[in-house]
Length: 265
Image (cartoon, rainbow, N blue to C red; front, side, top):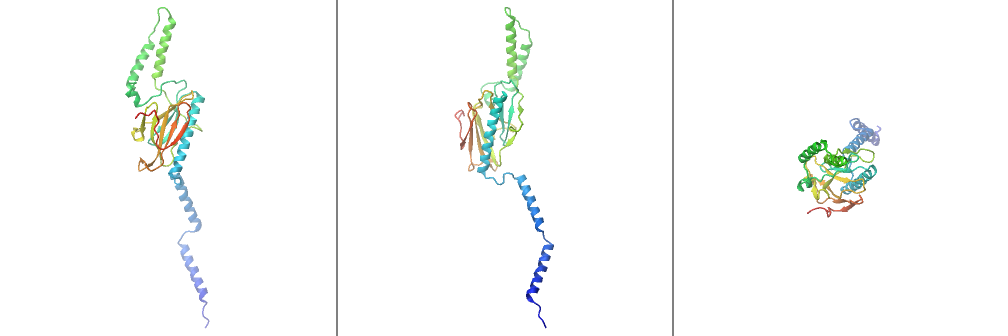
């Protein structure tokens, strides 16, 4: 009696086992589709997943410095005062432009109240007085033209007290941006503030501002950048400072948290 070939029977058994396994599993095409979907979702949800803290910081410093220079150029070319608005909590920033012809003094935040400048209530009261004075007919005994000059002065002072209506700039070069990944604003100091304010010292909805003027100057400013871990700035992560020169509008990147000379201790 002829014995069956053992090698053939083992081959048939392997084929049958493979058929059973593949009938209840996934094909190669299905696996590739699933992997592609996972990759697309990860890219959308975690855009900076492949960047290290150092790479995120380099990108943040480069983009922020370029944005400041663009705001500086826009102020000079348009003849309008510009400012950069910094949302310290959400780590976003954008450019705003004052109305054409506005020459008012940039507000200096808390320094206004400390040094006796007008608060909102006092400003409104003085504005009402100036409106009444400007509406009164005033004539000089010897020269009627002088009366108009005096009235014009009142109107000029009234216009300077009116808060400017700043408009957000949104074009191909200037638009709202966010710091990448875990990079955050750690602190902001300007010569108008005269102090350094940490991110935690800004109230909800309060913004920080850096001003740029049509004559090619700017506010003197320093901005600290750090990396956030567990809702606080990491002590071990990279730290950098951007310093803005008020005479040239140029920025310098300094390693570590550096305080400028205009900051009061």
